[in-house]
Image 1 (tube, rainbow, N blue to C red):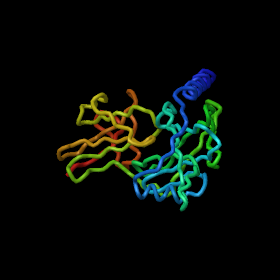
Image 2: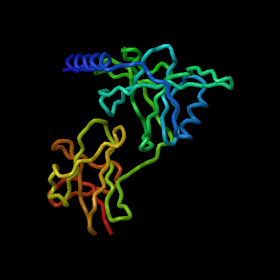
Image 3: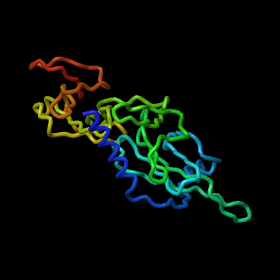
Image 4: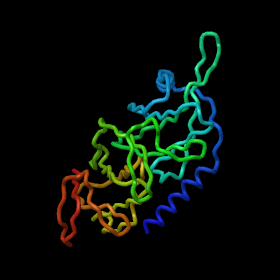
Length: 241
């Protein structure tokens, strides 16, 4: 099984690396805040984290640079663009290549790999790497020590905002006494790597629930309130007043 995973992963990387790779385009962003941030980067460096973006950079030695993320199962290669600079005499030069990841949430970590002219590699500018023994590859990692804690809670509009944090690329479903424990009615949406959400209107009452991967129930770690139901299952509890 392990050997099969390695071969499948290698085939995936090779297949992506040779498909649809074109030279990067020179770009200047119209968003003033982002454009200012990009122009303040003097040379390629380790990933830069802001409240709204993670900026990845690379030098100009390569014709094509792309990035692929774990939450997309490395199936999509996002191309880097080229940051240019025009001096006082009107001469334009190419400074570095970049990709801006828009942050939907302040997630704690993000894994990725780069593609340089068709060759997969970890990010040489990022010292934070993680080795995956199953496929014998290194992955680069961005971690945010200032990430905020987001948890399942009742919102102001008498809805419950359900949160699940786990591995990316999964199908996470929700069931409870409000669905007669049917796990096929509600599916959470992955809004960020390994971060799943669902906003569900519920009337006043006490609700018991589990997340499900397939038919396997999983407790909501973001909600400390847990109980045993009448039928003996371990579930989370949330009250809508």
